[in-house]
Length: 134
Image (tube, rainbow, N blue to C red; front, side, top):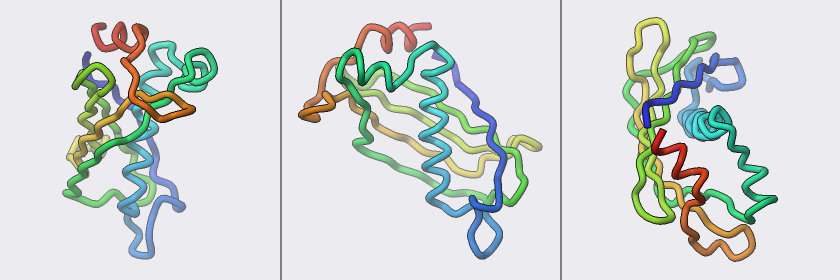
């Protein structure tokens, strides 16, 4: 699957006392980009929960911070998934400043498909596999 890009503007609430994006907010940006990637392909995580009893959980996360984003910056948050097993996906993600495409942070998130009631791993549903093959 090709890279999905989700634009996000940095608001005052995203910044710390130094006027730069608080490091934990990149995790929120990454999470939202993964969600919006699925939504762009017609898949709602709420519907996945209601219809199949499945949810996604983060198993592992690694993030490197390279530069700071600041108030009012327009960012491009990328999500590039790859199949890592029957129940796992790995997303490579970046936060880039839209004006010059410089990489501000780079991350890799391992996501596991589990049942909502027992949190036991379950094979990825066909609708997810179709998205990955598109």
